[in-house]
Amino acid sequence: MSFAAFSKDFTSNMFTSVENQFITKYLPQADGDAVRVYIYGLYLCQISADFDAPTCAKLLHLTEQKLFDIFKFWEECDLVRILSRDPLFVEYLPVHAAAGRPKSVRPEKYAAFNRSLYQLLQRAQKDFKPYEMQRILEFLENNPMEQEAFLLVAEYCVKKDGEKLSASHVLNKAAKLVREHKYTYEQVEADLADFNTREKELSQLFSLLNIYKKPQDSDYAFLEKWTNLGMEQGAVTACAEALGKGSLSTLDALIEEVSGKGYLSEHDVREYLSRRKALTDVVYKVARKLGVKIANPRAYCEEYAEKWLERGYDEGSLSMLAAYAMKLSYGFPEFDNLLDTLYAAGIVDEAGVKAYCAARDKQLKLLQRIQTVCGVVRKTQTALDMIETWRSWQFSDEMILEAARRSASAASPLPYMNKLLSEWKREGVFTAAAIPERSGSQTAPKQYTEYKSEAAISADARTERERYYATMRRRANAKAEQAIAAAEQDKQFAEAERAIKKGEIELAKAELFAPETLPDLRAKLQEAHLARRQAMTRLGFTEKDFTPQYACPKCSDTGFLPDGKMCDCYKGS
Image (cartoon, rainbow, N blue to C red; front, side, top):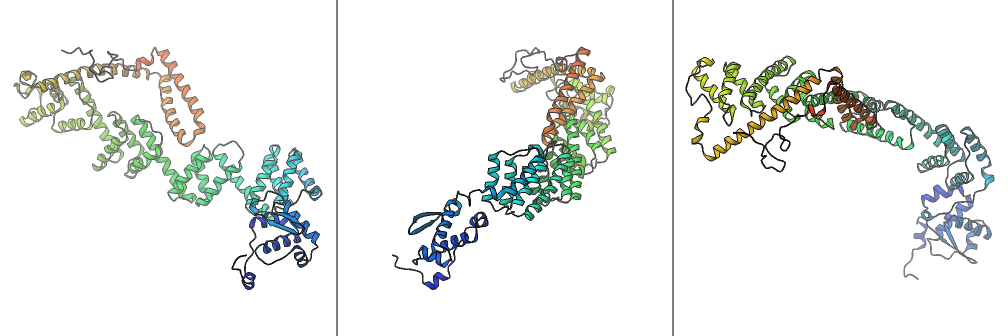
């Protein structure tokens, strides 16, 4: 015996704890005497006073046999264990470990319930098997849900599923309501009314997203999530309308993006989506002009397009500038730098952009003529700026080309051209006839090779080699470009080519916004490729004609093999 104990005054003020699971699962199905015995026995477990079964039965106004029968009942529920009958000794078990059920199922108790359930099943032309009916009755025995409430659940499932009705679905729905502590007819009716309202909301979203199926229980979690985010129903509808096609997961991703920016009302969301669409259209149009493929336009919208539109550039101006930038092999970063330069110069409106592009096109054409004379001259913004400078010096295209001819043998033609034109400007020479007949400053110093160092000689040789291969590659590229230009004169080929480009862009969009449309888009793209091949066959072209055919298959007219070694195909002097 312990050396310490609670006083009677202390024990009279202590508490007897009853597990909630006993209250929710077992108490509603047990009669009053059973509940009194269980709780009083629980109280006796906590006090150390001697208290036998006859005394307990007398105190509770029960016979000893009735007391034993009640504990036998709780033993069937796995809540107690009877260790001895005479004298009676009972061991209490934790409720969470109980595996039994309050009572064995008595069919007569559910006669009216069974009749009502069978009537519901006849509407769906469905017949539950005996073991399924047993599962339903066991559910009612083990859970405090009213029979009328369960019938209401079954009626809802009959209307929703029709001939696809299953006992598992009815039980899962009822179990979900029990977990939410909804047991009575009124509680279940209110929940299902709300459920029907949400079902209409989902059906509307399915229609907007072109989803051809009935809403599933898992789909309602999305509605609950969006409600918790604070999204108005009209805002959710606006997002679905913006997508046009997709899944609830796709819609959820868009709603997370919108709510993350703080847009929750329908008005704000529609404004944001309209702006978002405008930015996306700009990104795809610029990408198409630049010849760049993009998988996710969102990053480009935030980094580039939003800034461009805020500065006042419209889609037409951006398309013109992108077409010009494509000739310089620009990507998005270089194109953005170009726009920064133009914005700093005040070139924003359509008229200014049009004039800029027209001037640059003229400079590009002159640069191409310089390339035919000098060979290795890259198309860069710097080269075009130099041409603009030379023209500002009042030099005609003929004088600039004359300087190019005299600089053709230089290692770096453009700097030498700049030197010649600078001298001519200083001396007032603006016509070919007025060029003074002296050597040093008028032609590239090819005649002074004997005075060059070995490094300089090597550099000139390398330049000559590069010019040789550049000429070879230019010829091959020009031949392929001529073939493409000739084919594009054909209407069928041109339409197929446009369909392929459009299809590739739509395919990239669908990968992000509407994955379920990918099979149809791929099929259309294949049709466009087939139409292109048919047109090529009719015109007498092959894919080989549209691809540069280089003189040396080993190095593709670059002068270098894949392993980095110099090719032996060089035929220079």
